[in-house]
Length: 237
Length: 215
Image (cartoon, rainbow over all chains, first blue to last red; front, side, top):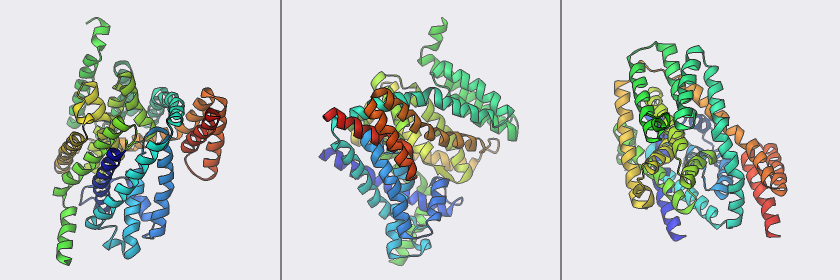
């Protein structure tokens, strides 16, 4: 337990600080390469520098993260996407209402972000580990079939339909690479994702050099994966 | 004091420090996966993505996790420099947190994930490499690739999350009647309160099934 707590504090400090500083950089993008997400930027703006709004927005996702952590040990992406940036911003805005001097300043966000990260990650991990084992077994047994249905076939279908709706070229490339992916890797999603990228690039910019390089990398990747998964052996080669 | 603070601020806004921030973030996320493998909690990702890694941990087949997550990593690394904001969900949490560990474990490399200090160092190394790569792509900027493919993926990615709620309810009903009743009541309550129904469904199922199990 002490090991888990110490490790959680270290992870929270590092991750929380870096992500909060990356979020502050979003307000200086594209000059500064930032890390975060467009939805995080939108949500931080929507709170309009009101500390209570930032705290309550983060808290809403905190409960959801706690439920997921207790049930499966997955903290959800919201810890770094939403909870840490909003808590870090809220803590700074309590003292100073000017967002330019607080939320937009990575040297301040890195400090409160590290603190928020350490507290949130440690709390979620200790909470998850005190749950009786019997309960987490129930959760696992319910979630495993749901998650495996999700991975196959629900996700491939969603990505496939999205590709088909994105135009003829995208649909064709995604279908070919998706089918190959399903055959070689047992899952179509990676192939579909790559097919969408290739297809959209061809649709907008034509079959240029970058597309050819990208396609070469993809084919090489597929061949390597096929080799290591014994796909060629299955064909009798 | 004011000048040192301003120096710090401009230093942290410079593109030179981007790989350093990436190193810190990746160290934390990669070590989070170490926590998950060792203690069963701490992975920085959604339930169904972590479950993909779990399939590999229990069954030995890492293909789904490795393929899915590295596909996202590749796509996001291309998109990040193009738009100026790197999406940490697809690139770091899914790519570095799930995809790279899955590839390592599939190849039989377990040391970076078994040892906490080693996992921090490995994560930091990956982060610096990716950070330099992104700054490099920013300078070279491949004009030939389109960033609009990521919109299609993002739309599909966001839709997948919605499917989990109903799938959990169906699965809970197959598990046992109390779990099933708990799941759909929990989901209905969560929906009423504008919360994601997956969380309500799991908590409801655990609660009611747990009460029956302990009785």
